[in-house]
Amino acid sequence: MGYKFGLIGHPISHSLSPWMQTKFIELAQVNGEYKLYQGSPDELENVIKHLREMEIDGFNVTVPYKQVIIDYLDELDADAAKLGAVNTVVLRDGKWVGYSTDGEGYVQSVKEKYPNLLKRDISVLLLGAGGAARGIYRSLVQQNITHIDIANRSLNNAESLLSLKESDTLTSVLSFKEAEENLSTYDLIIQTTSVGMKPNVQDQVIQLNNIKENAVVSDIVYQPIETKILKEAQNNGAYVHYGHSMLIYQGQKAFEKWTGINLEVNHLTDELEQKLRGE
Ligand code: ATR
Image (cartoon, rainbow, N blue to C red; front, top):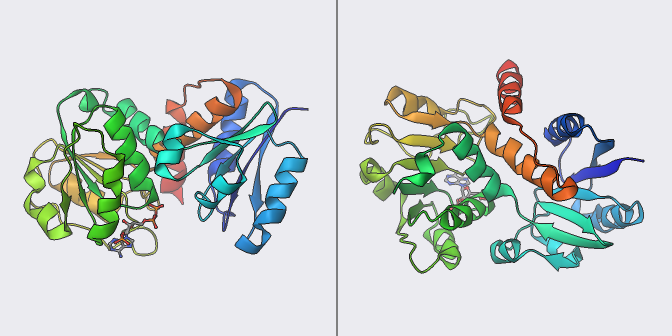
């Protein structure tokens, strides 16, 4: 018998994780499978029971269970506890241990594309303050990025990220209008809201007229891969960072937690890009 991995969430039938994790299993030359364990909130208890009984080696957790899964874990990584969210569960000595690899995955994906960016003394603008933004904010803080402003529709939600700061982190909470006005001060702009996602491909959370030359714009939305904000970034001479690469690296980090194998997966970023462009 090989490894048993999977994904819980709802709905997940269009998830790219089985494609990606099956590639990782092949690359690592191990035996294993990665399956979808879909279940509505009413069915979650049964799904969890099934995963316990089958002694699944590890699984990913996606919307809407990233918070609620914590109630079912035996142990929780300190960072995942701080975030209040888990996307990866590992079976270790019979116990379920929860981690969050989303933020780390984002940081790794940026390092692969722009190796020197996070080594510089940069100013970052985070657009959005949901679960994805929390993980990214925390991972940037851990990379010793000290200046990270947050712009969000609801300022209260943005303020809730301030508990993830370290003592030397400088963060202002801004409206989208204020972010547009200050845009020329940022070296990295990270779009983490769902704005611009299919089918609403004409939507864009802020305008980039005032962007700094040579700034990098990231969008974690990857359907479509060229979101409106990324097109505008390119039209304004900025560099872009596509969302699908975060998906690959959060998955790679989950695979590493399950198997101890740290795979080189750069080429899969290109493969996934082609797959998404072809759709
Ligand atoms: P995720 O886990 O993917 O980050 P989430 O936790 O639901 O998703 O967070 C969604 C983010 O997108 C939030 O920042 C949300 O803004 P609010 O905090 O004000 O709700 C943002 N968002 C969603 N729809 C939006 C819209 N139409 N305009 C602006 N921001 C939006």
